[in-house]
Length: 148
Image (tube, rainbow, N blue to C red):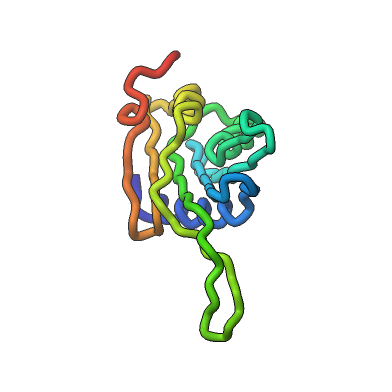
C-alpha cells in the first residue's frame, strides 16, 4: 500500500473521530476505508445507552460504503482513544483532549470486513496514533479463521 494512501486514510479517520458519539465509554473512534475505485468512506462510533445497540466506527464506514453499492474494501484505517481530563492551556482556557492509542477492530468488525474482501483476497488494516505512527496489518492476521 502506498504511503500517501495510508496517510490520507489516517487523516480522514482522525477527522471522522471528531464526530464520534461516545457519552458512555468516552472512547472516541474514527475509521476511513478505501474501495477499489479509490473512493473513501468514513465512520465514527455511535454509542447507545443499551450497549448492544452501539455501532463501531469501522462498521459505520463499511455500512456507508455498502449502502452506496460497494462490495470490496482495499484498506481501512482506525484511530481511537479515550477522552482525558480537560486541561488548562496557557490562556487558562479549558479544552478536551483525546489520548490516541492503537485501536484494533473488534471481532464483529473483523468478521464484517471479511465479507468484503477485494480481489487480492486480503484487506490492509491500519491502526494509527498519527500519520507518522501506525501499524499496517492484514485482515488475515487479525482473523485467521473467518466464518465465510
